[in-house]
Structures are given as C-alpha cells and as structure tokens.
Length: 249
Image (cartoon, rainbow, N blue to C red; front, side, top):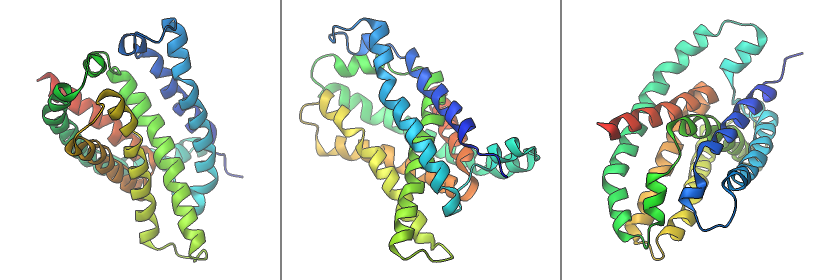
C-alpha cells in the first residue's frame, strides 16, 4: 500500500500558515482594537482551515487526474529524489525568473501609482510593513500552492473531467481550464484588498492586480501539471526571492 503524501503536504502547508505570525498586522491595521498577539493569531485561522481542506481535497482528486507530488512521493517511498529534482529544477527556475520579472515590473510601475491613488496611509503601511521574505517563501511558495494548485486545480480538472463523462484519457484542455480558473479565482481574491485601500480604483489598477496575479498563477499551474506541485512551489518561492533581491538593487 502506498504511503499517503497528505500528512507531509499538510505539515508543510501549516508551517506556511504559521509564518503569517511574522507579519506585523498591528502596524498594517492599527485601528482594530485587538491586542497584537490576538490579531496575529486571528489572521491564521482562515488560512489554516483552507490549507487543511484543500490539502485533503487534493490528496483525493489530484492522483485521479494524473496530478502529482513526485518529489514528496519519492521521498516517503524511499525512492531516489535526485532524478525527480533534476526534472523539476530547470522548468521551475525558468518560471521563477519570469514571474520575478513580472513582480519587479509591478513593483516599479503599478505600486507607485497605487500609492498616489490610495486614500490615507493604509496602502503605505501595507507596503512598509508587508509580509517578510520568509513568509512570502513559506506561505506564498508552499501554502498558496497547496491551496490553489494542489487543491483548486485538481478540483476544477476533476469537475471538467466528470462533465465530459470521464474519458480514459483526459484531454489537455481540461487541465488548461482548471489552471486558468484557479489562477483567475486567486487573482480575483486580491480585489477586495484593492477596493479597501482605494475606494474607487481606476480600471488599469483592477487589470494590473488581476493580470499580475493571474499570469503567474497560470505559469505555476502549468508547472504543477507537467512537473508536480513541488516544481510550482520552488518557482513561486524563487520568484519572491529574486524579486526581493531586484527591489533591493
């Protein structure tokens, strides 16, 4: 009987959730009236629940759709992990560099415009006291990939596959639909924050937020499909590292 990868993915995802405790939410939103420790603890409840839900969902649906966590699978099975890493690292590095370029361009062009368009100091506080690099690596690189790719892409692919009466060979378009839907949903999830910071954001700001999050999501989804969820994690985390270094130059 094959050992499930779910416990290992779940632990990794929850470590990412715990890294949110490093974010100084009390400085970003100083008017909540909550004690800083309470505010930080509250901030991890919803991500923790989503992580558990989507890791378990992905564990059920991903293998059915031919979507895998090959590195973790090899590790828990006692198989060699180096060949898996060799297959994953090249594509992950290319996507990481591409997404880092997107993030850096966004930081240099869109963020200054949003700072001028925002009302009050909320956006400035978010920029000044946003997630540290470690949180971006652990939560963004691991937890978000488990929720969005391992969970959502697997779910959407399974739904599309069921709708076309479960053919033995899954058409490629099924995966693309799932990848794009998951990326679009993740991108749309950033709009409430934009509207909270900018009461009437211009159309270009909405488009920038959607594209700035959806395009990387599609690239990470492609990595998940072709090379496993760990490749998407490495690319996501690597993009944050590279873009942070670029911003410091």
